Length: 257
Image 1: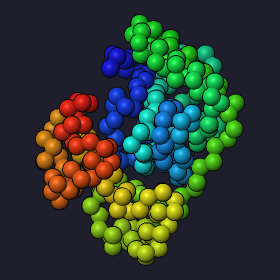
Image 2 (image 1 turned 180 degrees about the vertical axis):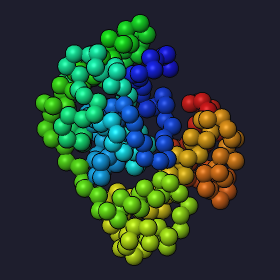
Image 3 (image 1 turned 90 degrees about the horizontal axis):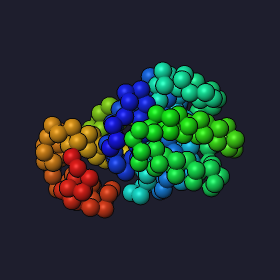
């Protein structure tokens, strides 16, 4: 990773795969740009798809999180403070200008943003002006692109997803009461809107929690798995291998703790 100024940063998710297990609310603007694979992203009460060429602006103060993604999903992530954006001509206001949602860029525009981001990280001394220019171009392309089509979340699904983010081990009966729907109806609506069942979503949250504990260097694989809510290391191993295609040890040996 290239050293970044404290008020603006840019990285590729494949280089920093840690995923928060609670909804994030940043004081900064977060810009996401899909490179490969696909994902479902929760933002401002709706779920929006993130695919190759999709660009999303998450305004400061907006709750958002990655709901689910495919194994090959990757994206550029920029985090920009108001202090940084105010010094860049034609940059957006981090507090919000326009709708919340992802828009699909034309291939030429997508290639430009991807190429420019790679160049920025390859030349550390050009980081500040480069990131400012990347932000301006991303904002221009986003405004020119067709409007996105996110799916408004059913209030019960919103409550259930947030509850599972807080506590992945919450029993279905308690989750049902929290959401305000019967277990059967909640499972049906949850799958329709999120794109995966409650069990799969719960497992993904446990994996994200274990990943954060491992990357923080606080626990070894076994204890991180148990702390995250898995009943055993073998259960964690099976879920991890199914999600990422490799064993936990092989993955962290290649990507670092």
